Image (cartoon, rainbow, N blue to C red; front, side, top):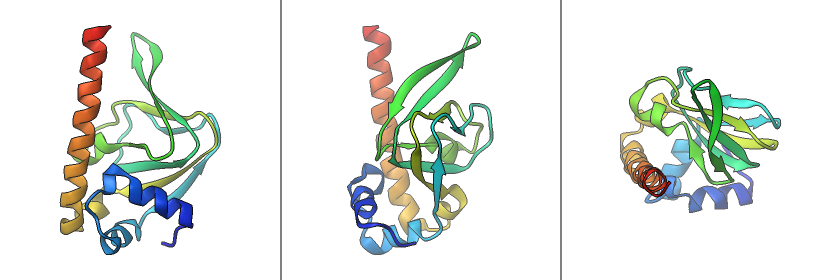
Length: 146
């Protein structure tokens, strides 16, 4: 898949792809899909099965979680952010919903394809562990600080 120069520059800056060389990034994204979503569209829904990781290339989105019957926004996403990583790792139902807040352009990576590239997936999973650790640390701070 060929990328626009600005998209390629964004991908090369992402912590998710840290440590990948140009060849590995090209292999990883060869089977990726571009997805466009209008404002208001749900990109993933809490409880659904999914094995894809999404990277927000343009636009803004919101992660929300249902609590006591109310949908609560728990994080806002901007270009360069990724989501869907938990289902990619554990092959379980989606833990939250993600909705486009503005028109969005995304890159969707299939988890089965990522696993089929062991030299690349080991780097991706290491980077995902770091990203998830940072999110957990942030969530812990919110809980403790109120």
